[in-house]
Length: 576
Image (cartoon, rainbow, N blue to C red; front, side, top):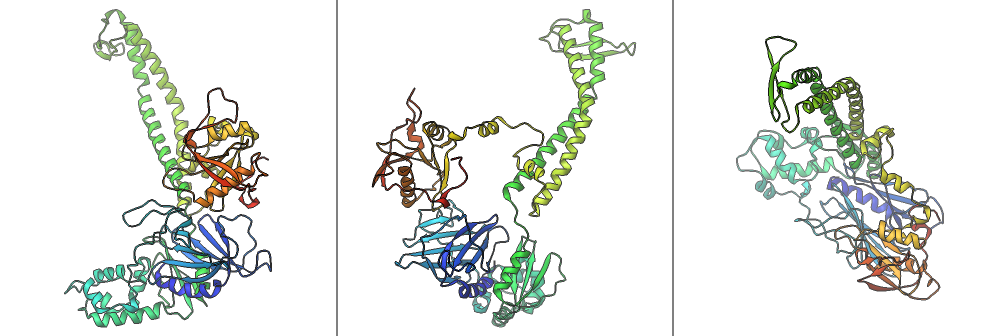
């Protein structure tokens, strides 16, 4: 999303959303929806509106009109957080949403609108509460994960064409350089409002000094580019939408009408406001591509291509079946002439008198054993020759379907269900379930743990009985997961899924889950309960110990009040 377009849109969104309460955030297949409500929860339905963020290329944002009530939230803040400001930092593809509660607590939501995009929620102490996408540290930016300080992106590098100076142009363009193509390419990399996908379409509207072979007048070009920007990205509607696929998927909103005689760029319509234009253009964007499904479709196509090559090689080898059988027959006919331990032997050819046949042997085998091996090999090759054509036809049929599935996935379309399963490698039609799948499906319901999600989105598993505790702790939990159990009282084992890397749950999350562990114990009616917290790698089961007994070698204690997980925290049906 171009920073000039975002600056125009943010002004419209500010009028729509500032003053509304932040109801929560929901995940979509291609991004996230931030829901705002101008009425108290449950009052006056139809007062909600949403800021939608698309993180699939092309990254885009837009607002939707009031939406219905929502049952499943991905993330929510404490009730009463109201949006106080919505800004777009100058020439940056980022939105900053500030929220405050009646008690004075503040939050900030960062929406990063460059590939691969991100949504991050920051607390007043500048620690991240939630991230759509966690990232390790790099040379350009510190790590992003809940509990860490927010690391802002590098400073915006694009220049506003309305604030461009002659000094900027003289610094970018080599002295005496008058060819138009390099000059335009250099300026396009530095100045906002010149997206690659639209450059060819925009060229006729640009100042002649950028597209013609004329000497550079930096002062005049700076003035002309400022005038061009006001005409192309002026604040007054109508606003026109454009989308393109090359050199990468993109979209733009302009107030200037363009000549659309260029392949690959599509005009989506003319709209009466910036907000409406962003919303309608979002509906015209190409469907997002599922990276996992695309990788699976490519992998399946490669496997089938290798299978085709293997069958063709088998067919080529099978053509030697008759010749191999003839050599075996010759060997049997002249066994007495074959010396023991020979690696090869020349024998008369029964089919052509006066000629000899050179036969390769295994010196470790006796002559008749070599003949038996040749006959078996010839029989196998003969069977391959009979069966391989049908197998080759089947593989080629699967190849054709796999190519169709890959093409559909690459267009953002879902292939047929059977092809989707096969492309992703999840199952094969007609094939028996794998042992691992049968084992999961056959797990008794009493062993399947309860599943919840914390306020910050962490997955939590809670055992149902002693056998379920054993199954959860010693079979399902990973070494890096957090493990909890009430100290000094019987109760459920609780596992907070953490995963590898520096991704750490916040103190608030650990206290929230500790309260759940206290609730699912015999101390649920107590006031404050000590809860043992450790990582699964420090939990073992003593030899011959009864079900549900665990031994902890290293831990800390968190004091929590027993709290029943709310209904909205339930991740899925757990068989209670």
